[in-house]
Length: 355
Image 1: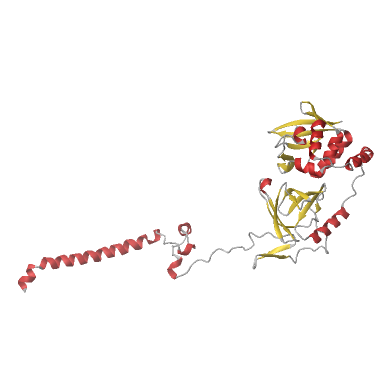
Image 2: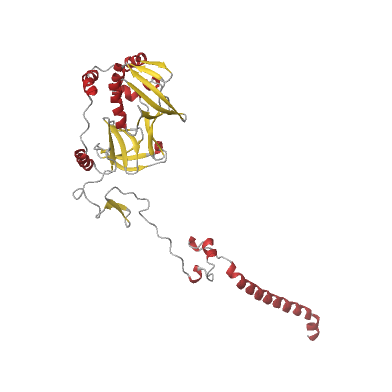
């Protein structure tokens, strides 16, 4: 036995050396691991602790939150962050729905303040449900709700609402319309509420100025033109081609009867009228851009091109459709008008004479 033990003693020495080496390696590994622990970042538990957060904690010893089974609470979420309420309402943070604001002044307590005295509240039979305003006005959208059929409709600048009004501008809390030649604002609220605000505002507005003697003298003839039987579109188109003449560079002559007949023919105007988009420069009105101008239309025959921006008429800046209508009356009374047009970044003048 002793001889056998001596013969294989080397194997016992090898086993003891392996065990000692393993113990020594484990001790070194534990020591090095303890030293490097403060320079390592454990995996973030469920997204609450990030690598950036862990590395930012240099002012105190790093202790992972998950070591003791604790996690950081998530950041509070505001349920009203994406909710836009109408005037006189506020968002309920519990339900994320709009509710009447008890602190807001009611119509009985004080009249509503109109931020644009020129804009009447529209009493059109449709309600404004919301707006999506883009930096480019062409991409702004108004969301409308028709109470008669409870359907939702969408309107963009240049579109028509209920075949009664045309959208000229969309803002965050109102939509500008032109109905029967009058600029109106469609705001939040039902039709009855808007009609009451409109009536109150009309009572507060000053009396419109009386027409000038020239306009009063010309009124019977304009009424006679309006009372004429409607011309067929093709016949009127031929009359327009004959009644408009270019007399020089950027100078045109138009027969007065043709102009009045076109203005009083709503179907003809609707078929030929371009899309009118208000433009702004440095936050101020800069006129109206005409888009979709056809070369064979009356506008094309009058030297207007697609994309032209009409900035002023007879030196008066066009800042509202009402101003354009007023200048049209001046054209009929004076017999001449000069447009300032921006085309391709350059400004030019176009003159018209009535015959």
